[in-house]
Amino acid sequence: MTRALACAVALVCALVPAATAAQQRPAGSAARAWAIQVLVPGRAPVGTRVLAAPTGAIALDGAFAYPKDGSVIRARSVATSVSATGGARADSDAWANVRALSLFGGEITAASVAGEVHAAAGLHGVAGDAGTTGITKLVVLGRRVVPVANRQIRLGDWGYAIALERSGSAAAAPVPGYRGFVTALDVMLTSPHGGLPAGTELQIGYAEANAQAGARAPLPPAPSSPPELRGIPQLLSTPPRATPPLGQRGYVFPVYGAPRLVADTFGAPRADVSGGWHHGDDLFAPIGTPVLAVADGLVFSVGWNAVGGWRLWLRDARGNEFYYAHLSAYSPLAVDGAVVRAGDVVGYVGDTGDAEGTPSHLHFEIHPRGLLGRGYDGAVDPTTYLDTWRHPYDVTLAAAAATSETARTRAPEPGALLVSQTDISSASGLVPRSLTRAAEGAGGPLLPRVQPPAATLPVRGAP
Image (cartoon, rainbow, N blue to C red; front, side, top):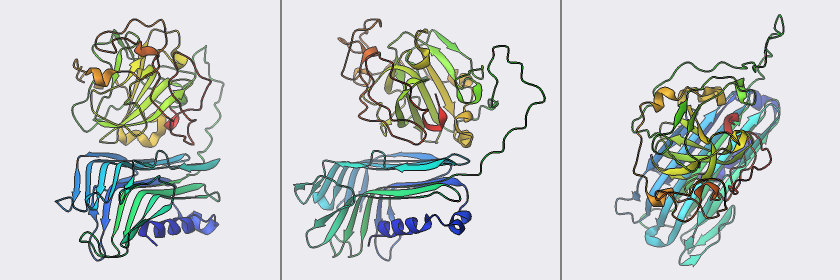
């Protein structure tokens, strides 16, 4: 039994819905992930950085080699991300990705190895999934292998590998909870090989997530008299007044060039939004204007929402999160789990969702890491941040190219900066599928200027 399988057995036992066991578990969530770890009997583990939440973090690292000559493990790049929030609604996410992997001098190779797991728990139920966990172009001892969950692959007379190893368990009472893990590729040596002793384990793409629902929030006291709305929606929560530093430099303005108008409407009443107030700023620009990643980070929750339209989230290296809404189209970089750099084109300004028929604009939000515990209501006023961020004027054609499908719309003809022969505002988003989460419905490809039926809210209840 591998260490990971032993952990899975322990997790299953820990989540048996027995009252005494559940009462001992604190409410909240946690996540952990690493891209590569080498476990040699009698030695300290060696590998890439281990990330752990609840604080949330992301690591975008370069090449990795073990030992220094790369004779055992070589990878072109590795990346990991974790995030967790607790309370009456608890969510945790973990993700690890390895590109261009080679083990034992090419005896095992893969174009990419990704491990991803999500856990969610609320007072009305729990859920979990393995996200985009997978291995592409896996070749073992010269033969192409199609990965199947928990499949054991023989490695000559010196070991075996388990592809897409995963497990998940749920507890319903007395407090709902879910816990799961994945190891995208787990290699065990049964005999000495490559200079390593028998019993050595190589874990590639490991992620685990745990969510435990908290106690139900008490009902607010009844008002002494009915509120006098006079046509203005009542605020259900208070917008944060703080604008904490995000902890890093080099942020980029999210709209290419200079927008026509930045409307500082943060905190204004909004009847159809969580909390009853506007959580961001509206950046008005011509339809089809490129929308940029504001920082190096990880793209997630790409897809459709009835309020935000075509939208996506970005998490930077400090764990801060940024929300983009009302897009007209995505770039090929707008894929769940994609690692992007500051200034990369991720989409295009539009008017989708509840902005249909209004002047085209980007709805943009900032959720600092220290306020993620407030859920979607942890957004802060973006204006003072946007005033200091750099406006790039050097995006590349390759980055700006929209995805393949096109259709005629009212959008203007694209300029030389964009796609020379197609209308990028109606292009189809290259999103094979959006993450199916307990907190949101499945997303989908961006259809040409068609408003899909309403979907549930995205991560943290965002529009």
